[in-house]
Image (cartoon, rainbow, N blue to C red; front, side):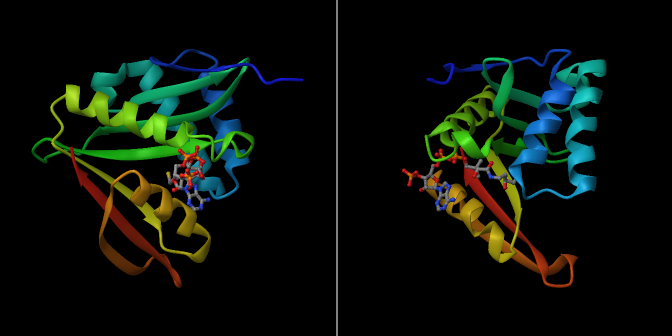
Length: 163
Ligand SMILES: CC(C)(COP(=O)(O)OP(=O)(O)OC[C@H]1O[C@@H](n2cnc3c(N)ncnc32)[C@H](O)[C@@H]1OP(=O)(O)O)[C@@H](O)C(=O)NCCC(=O)NCCS
């Protein structure tokens, strides 16, 4: 059976906390604390609104499920610098260009809100190398590595792009 088409939308809707939590859990790379934070950001943004919360969401709907999403926003106390806080695509939808589509939409949204730079962080564990390849494919440069940032053997990699 063919899968329903994927459609990008914003803003968030009431069903998103559970659906985004399910997506982030299925992504297979986030720990329990990260999954809880991903859900909490959605709940907070639904309650306060995107501008007040400082988080902007793009959702890729596929039927009743969320096939991917991105969350970005201004970095507090910086000048027009934004961060891509989250990007995830369900394992079944990967390598079909959805990640790049979400990234392009996030860049366009950030630019429209005044962003001149977008930064994205990742772990530097071996199992995060696909994410590094993805950021590079989207035109991002690795600016810094901080060894053991998350825990011993799990450092931080900071990527960025001038928009
Ligand atoms: C990173 C992620 C969002 C990419 O989504 P995607 O829809 O598969 O990405 P795309 O299909 O748009 O890939 C674009 C390009 O990125 C690179 N790329 C993506 N996934 C890759 C992988 N697993 N290995 C190597 N390169 C990869 C390729 O160059 C790819 O182009 P190609 O398929 O024509 O070779 C997805 O793998 C994911 O959800 N990972 C887990 C969540 C995560 O770690 N998020 C980042 C931290 S918040």
